[in-house]
Image (cartoon, rainbow, N blue to C red; front, top):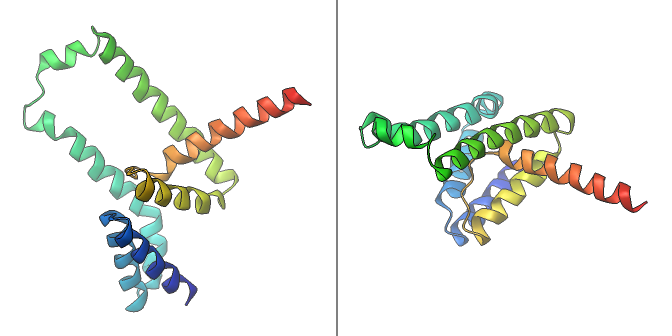
Length: 154
């Protein structure tokens, strides 16, 4: 029963914060629970991130498929500062995602803070939730930073 109440609270928060993604996700999960399809929740949890990343990646790659990005645009990635910085940013982001995944394997209960932080970011900062791995990667970085700083102060 607690799961249903939390989902309803998330629906209300999503509506108040005008976050269609949170509202829709919570509604779908509430329906899954209410029609006794709970046995599919582990599969949704396991494969949901993969499916979300698949659709996100497809959305990002549409300009290639629709030929709005030319070969000249691709070569400029290697010859301009913004392009080179984009390459570095992409590499750094995937590295951070890997560190986030490692952190979640070690300390899986952190997902609660990541989800609540994401909801706060969506509602109050008008952010876009692209995944808990990046949030976990940033958390891993912050943990290392805080450990380093506070160890130096001792």
